[in-house]
Image 1 (tube, rainbow over the protein chains, first blue to last red):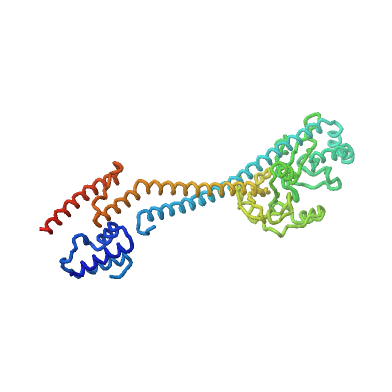
Image 2 (image 1 turned 60 degrees about the vertical axis):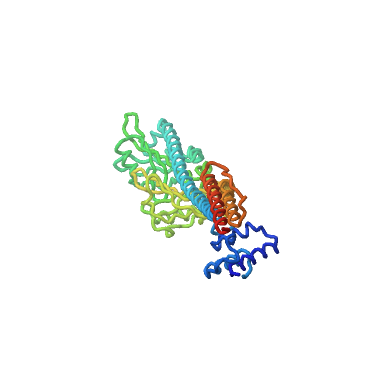
Length: 66
Length: 388
């Protein structure tokens, strides 16, 4: 399982746990990281640059460290 | 509000505009206040000059009329022709108190030229035989007609009427002169204008010893050494703070000049001065004017404050209106586009944007909706390809 997918799972868990607007949060993270979360699946290969951007986006939007 | 947002920048610009507007209004009001003060000072000088001229004309008319009546009196003519000083004094002295009550302070008879000496001074009978050698004396001797004008004689600046008296054959047997001290005018001027006045005499035309003697006689402080080029003949107030001229009388232009605005306690004054020429055209004196503009100034201040508050309120309301308008027609719609774009990226493909107007933002909304549809279509195709 790729790091990108793990991060996507983390995002979905946080959304569910905090009853957040999924489309809004995913959209904000997608725009900040430059990657559509819909295209990330378990087989998506890791790109260190994209992983770093996604971590930063999660931190900015959800205020948590991933 | 986000500091990088257009909304914040527009608000900042409008607040700066408001501040600039207020500064401009304050500057303009200050300018107009100064201009109005200057206009009031100029008005004081002009009106005082006019009143002074009116008083001069009126008093000359009065003294001329008195002299007209006097020369018709054969007894007075005979006494002058006979050079009978005692008889002339006995005939004229009873009239002098009445003339003094009318403001005529000087009354003299002169012998004819070439001697042209003072034959009788009703205001100082013991003193006679002196030669005044003033320009009015020379003029009347040349023209043998009535002459009028201001003449500064040793210690006093007076408006004078000098006319010849002729015998039955038309030969000039002497002259009669009436005079009024100009210092008397200033109280009348004060009563009419409310301003304070000071009559200044050019020291060049005043005899030092006579000024000292007259100061003693009039129980007036001898101010000879107070100023380099003038002495004060009369004033309407003893307040030295407001009556204070330190310039040179010779430098005062014909039309007068505004000196300055100043404060004394809570009161605000403007000062001005205009010259007074003698019969020979010399600047023998000047009238120093002080006008209290506290009431006018207070009114201008009130107007200034009202205008300032009105400007701040109207500009603030204008800013509020503009921000509300911009929020409605631009910012709120842009925020909606951002929100929908974010949601579409987040997977909510049902969020749509409907062009709410035909303006620039409306065109952006329309364009974005087309992009959204293309984006969803491409996304669907990519997902389909990934599935295969």
